[in-house]
Structures are given as C-alpha cells and as structure tokens.
Length: 354
Image (tube, rainbow, N blue to C red; front, top):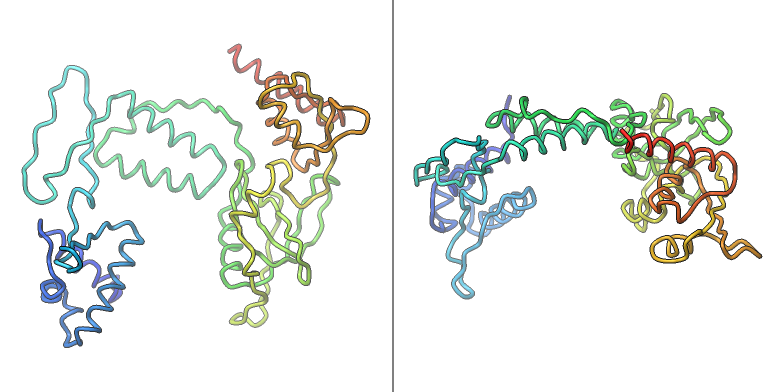
C-alpha cells in the first residue's frame, strides 16, 4: 500500500531522532529527511518541521526542544519515552530478568507482571467487553492482541462472571452510518421505539453528536427548525436513511454554542432519552450524609418534607442510583418504579449470598 508523503516524512524524521542520544539541529535533520532537503528556503523548511513536530506531539510523540537560555540547541526524542518497556511475567521461583544491552531501544526497562497482576489485566479486558460498547470492546481486543506478543495472556484465567448485566448493544453499522451523517452534516430519518408508549414513530433529525454513557450509546439530535436537543438511544433506533439529496452540501450546521461533553454531563443518567418521562416519588428514611444531599436533587412535594419528586426517563438507571444509598432512599410511587427497585434488591441479595 502506498504511503502518503506526510507519513513518509514523519517516519524519516522519527528514525533520524531515535538513532541519536543527543540533541540534533534542524540543519542536521534536513540532511537525513529527504522531504526536507529539496531546495526549500530556511523559512519554508522551519515551517514544515514545526508543523510535523506539533502534529507528532498531538499523537503523543514526546519530541523535546532543547534550549540554552533563549537559544534552541536542537531536538531530541528519547527512546525510553517513545518505546514501550519490555513485558514479562515473574513466575515464583524464577530468576530476576537479565539486564539488556545498553544501546538503542535495548536500554528500555523491563516491566514485570506477577501472575495475579496479569490475571487482573485479562479480567479488566473481559469486563470492558461486557459494557456493551462495540468500539471499547474492539480497543480491548486490540490491546490484548498486542500484549499477547510478549505475555501469556491466554493463560491468565480471566474471570468469566458478569458483575453488570450487559445491555442491548448498538450495532456497529448503525454507529458507522450515524457517524458518517454527522461528519457530513446530513439529516437522518429512522423508526424509533418509544419505551413509554411502546410504539414505533418516524423521526427526522439533525445529528449533533454521539456519546456513550452508563453502558448505552446515545445520539444527540434536534428536529429541523427546532432548538431543543433530544437524546435517542441507539438500541431503539431502526434502519437509518441518510438524506441523499445534494450529497456534497451540508443540510445544517452545529451551533457553535453546543458542547457535546457538557450536554452529556448536564443531566443525570435517568433523565436521558427522547421518550415520555414519568415522575417518581422517593422517601428519605435517613436524613444525613450523601442520601440527604441526593434527596435535595428532587422537587419538593407539598406537605411532605420526607418526599421528593424526580422526572425519570430511564427507570433502570434511576433504581440503580437509589440502590447505592442502601435503603436510605426508597421509591414509593409509581408502582412500576417500586417493583423494579424491589427486584433489583432481590437480585443483589442473591448475588452476595452466592
């Protein structure tokens, strides 16, 4: 496969820096990076190098600028900051790792895992796969494949138990389709299953962002001509039809004031969604500590100082939050919230009894 000129230039630059243990000037680098040595003016060469250096730093390559006061002496990339350490497992009764050669990348330190630590790494990857995020699962698999080059991760014995039940996963093709529409700023139409009324409705929206929260993927979007941003759970979205008209033209623009990260954090998990909400009433049994602070998040119920109302779109997330207060906060209405809370308590007791 052909390599782009920029990638080729970066590889040449990294090779020139890594073969030296001392700072090297831009003039010396230009003699070893063919793309720099093409009769450019000093200013053009300096601008190209600065762009390359800044972009590589953005990707995590720690290129140092070495100075003496205000004067730049040169640039350096230390191998111990660029390469990963050697990985190995320390089996009980084994010998200490031998010291490696002292030149080049062989000067790297060795990172040694105890068998229990390696098992914890494998177990963490297994848990990541259970969260329901296909992209996270793909990254976890990629990381374990890389570790397998040096470590016996297949024999680490990851725990197969499931602490948190996996939710319905978002389809990878759906993520790709929505991501492409978002990048090209094209409207999308889909059938959406509203959990409140258990009905399918057609929605046409302008995607503003995708985010993963509490084991669930969401699409933040607004209807054309509206300002209100709603959140759609991807596992309730059917087939997506992307607007095919004027493919090279944007259908909309994302408002400059819209911040996806702030939007995703602006509400509690149980408030997320696009369907109808319900009001849950909870009772404060112990008026102190975290439960008392959480209780104040709800709306006051007139005449009942020990009760508060919460607007809820996701009952499952709401009852898990209540359970974290160990009985200090309990739901009293509506019955569906009370029933789900009691079922979660029952499952939790069974789990710990086992």
